[in-house]
Image (tube, rainbow, N blue to C red; front, side, top):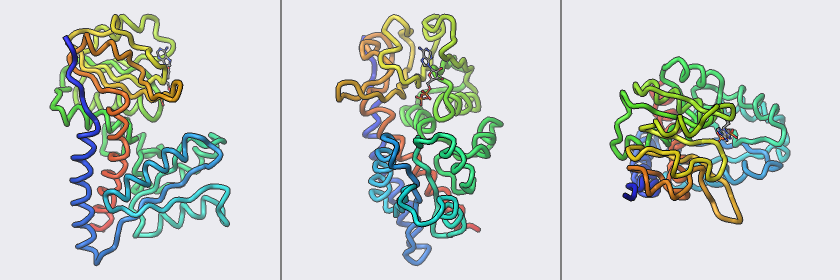
Length: 282
Ligand code: ADP
């Protein structure tokens, strides 16, 4: 059989329309003030400017004003700018586009963000809240996994979920989000002894390893729903972690590109709108 394709582009469009309406309402309530998303990036890193640019475009498309700052082009310490954004009531959300060429510097800057404006769930405070099962801002890719499952009415509670990857931005937060939704979750990583034995038992399989084709058709169960978070450029093409041939075996699967990718920036914006709505409530 051929899997049902869990299309992320259509879902992202629906989310965009909903967010645009919420931003319009906010602006009407606040004398035309537009919520601002501060985006900080390191131009020395190759991936960060791309992420920042896609966020910037997506923000404009829902009526959120992006303010982009580049480390190295500032006339002040980046900490000073971040502190200013923290204090400015017009700035609803702050994102530091990772990675930084100097990873330790990137992490240190993240810790300056006010957790109430941390709309990409990057601060240790929000990571801690999420790990404890408390309300928190969540890394956007992890939230996009849940948005796809919810958007396609795929049940999570009581199901056996397997997450491949344990990074702070995808694997770990996905684990917490599935756990709080009552899934039984196994997390696999580089040292997992028999990856195929684990993934074959998954009813929900979320893959975030950054290894193209890691999950082959022989590693999935026919009843599985597969969410592929992998985005790797191979010969100028974007490919996922799941071999497209797995779609011949499983029940449903996200494509790459066009699955998780388009939904991810919408999650940053949704959390920005939530932060703006909350800021206004004082
Ligand atoms: P991402 O941002 O997609 O989460 P990272 O490179 O930060 O990517 O993390 C990769 C994760 O994938 C790590 O947790 C690592 O253990 C896992 N991983 C990488 N290769 C394999 C593999 N061959 N088998 C199982 N897990 C793997």
